[in-house]
Length: 235
Image (cartoon, rainbow, N blue to C red; front, side, top):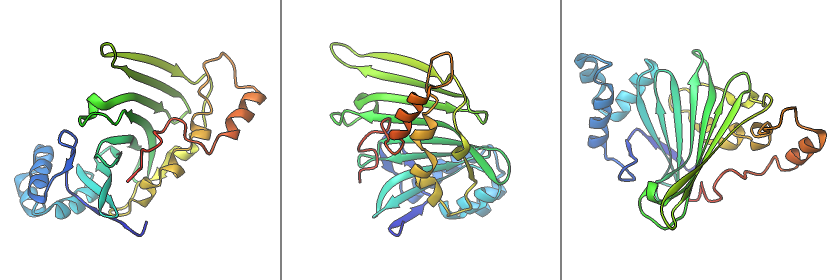
């Protein structure tokens, strides 16, 4: 991605904005002050970049904001045990969220995916929300999907649907290397990580494995992304 840049400023998901350097540093300090000594923060907390480089080496909390053509498009949070990636739309609402669990020093597993769709009518994220879909994977191929649909007329209510795969799904592509500092391209290439044709192949609540006909139907649409908002990555 030739036009992609990054910094370590803080994404405010209440005000839907990227904070400036000073406010970002204050927020980072609040997040990590119980985990590091005052001496370490004094030495490594001079700038958000200084902190991010130190935190990455020591598996501590730090944020990264990704920009495409100078516009925020993703927000990554590294912690001791996880890497959390949120993709942002033009309003800085997050639309797709992925959580990777670090399994060892080299590799991590995509354990959760959230997909959100919006009505495009309200300036507040939750008041504009139409649907939340939450996928949970295990290394053994277990998969559960929870879908919450917001019904706003005549009054607000939530319709909830829960499904589990009746047989293991292919999660081989859920395993990726833990990125080195500054090397976030693979995390942003979501189509190489989230492959609906494989990941959703096992969403079958029947008692047995899928039939040959079902497999053929699912493989025909493996390049589609029916569970992603159509404009999730619109800049």
